[in-house]
Amino acid sequence: MKWDRKTIATGTYWLFAFAAFFANYLIRNSEGYPSVLATFPLSLIVLEIVPLDQSPLANFLGTGLGNFLMFPVLCGGLNAFLIYALLKVIESARKSPPA
Image (cartoon, rainbow, N blue to C red; front, side, top):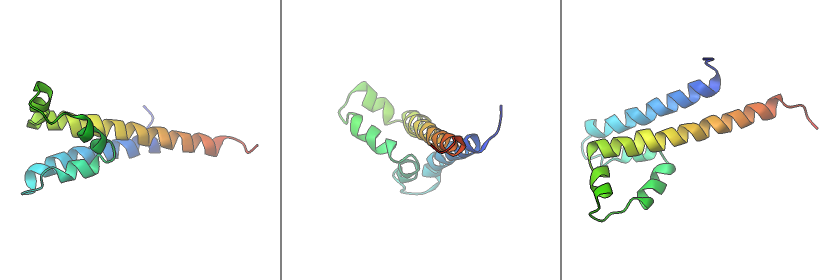
């Protein structure tokens, strides 16, 4: 595997998202703000989609494991993919000859 800038940037971001999630447990009264801010904007979209009723999905996502899967894994992973795709487009635009 070639370690280029895109891979390093996205891997660093994803590690930052995991670190922000674990910071929620170290900071008193953080109420999950570190992970929501680290995985912004997809975390806000997911928070709007997730039902707030007493469904089994809402009950599961309210647990520590559910929050872990929702924020750093899902939202952080999708944000990392978007960062990778954006950097790949920028790199290919720089390599293409001008018209």
